[in-house]
Image (tube, rainbow, N blue to C red; front, side, top):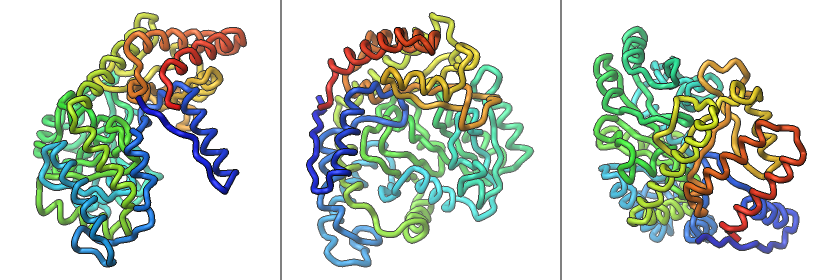
Length: 414
């Protein structure tokens, strides 16, 4: 059971905002797939005196003195991460998943090289080549899409790759609910002479516990965030089994894209990696998937359109435009009124802008951490359906908010 505490500061404006956020997190049902609740130990490490220490470089090769303790911390983080994913090399310094992706891409291909990644509307990520990201600015970028059923078609991806002849193929997604076949991606990459990179930011916890196929046998480099299903402090990591790539990754993280590491975050990552090595973490990941399947199935029973048909992991998307005649933005705002937090999300062939969208994305990791099981998610599905079917009925909004309050009061974080 997580128990967070209110904080007390001399700066009362910041104190109030932080404590209001604590109350918001307690009172809301959190369904954003990229969010989770860290343990008290992770929180303590992230808020520790390590924030005072600066130390560019790597353990025992720093450009600053006084790094003997942070060297221990970073080495522990690296060793725990390598053990967690059974990988030879790891860099735990990236400040975020996007920085990790930037360094990983640069370690594999030159500036202006060709990247083939998953399109944003099909479930990809900004850093996989989108025009407003560094990846779309420094590289030539092309995209593959899911098919009409919302599923990756590896034959189509192969044909596209043959035409483009990319230097790098990126697999992995931020809004794709089915299993990703890394072996097939490797076969495609080999046929066109491309490097292969996997971004497992969303499914890292599932991969670590063998509930999703691993990319490490097939990919030149693998990146991830450390929050989401890994349930750690916010940040990025890069892993590989190739020593030459590992050396390039280290150089591109520092001094390529970053300065001194955030040692408080690295310590918090290390704590989370140790937690993930405990057998209880696998049980938690199993429950995430059970919850997602039960949650998703309730919508399907109500004839709500699920993008890609179902879920194999921790998330799924609903086509709210087709199912409720609402935009993703409208659906998000309606659910927020009843203290349910989701995010709007583009869906395949979306005709709405990324600021509006036709879908919403629902994830189960955070509420699974709080103790939700299948029955709670089934109940929650019915609350959401009622709200979206009656978006302007104040009585239903009031009743739904009371039902949400009843659920959150049973699974407290304060």
